[in-house]
Image 1: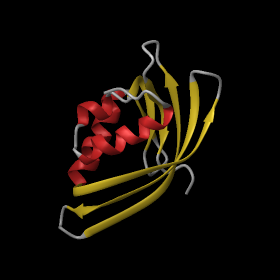
Image 2: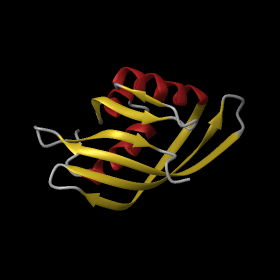
Image 3: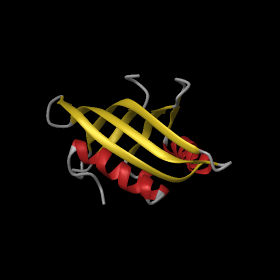
Length: 127
């Protein structure tokens, strides 16, 4: 299911991440979208984003992502900036608990078919 509103990009990201549906997660990104890693280095394109998200899934088991869009700033009818406070609980490969909380900044764009997709996803942008 494609996102029908800017904020639904994050809602669906959380839902697909929690079910580990990598194909649906990747479908939320434009083909040349960028995803910023925790080290500040961005990967570009859905193949690189897929590889990054696969690595995250491999590093954490039983993870649950919670997405909380705190602000949407529209730029015309087809572009928006999302401020998202997100968290993830899970277990590392050795079984120890992992708790992550960050503040994301994301740019999403309405596509010709009406769906919204990520153009730029920086999960660590705001500390």
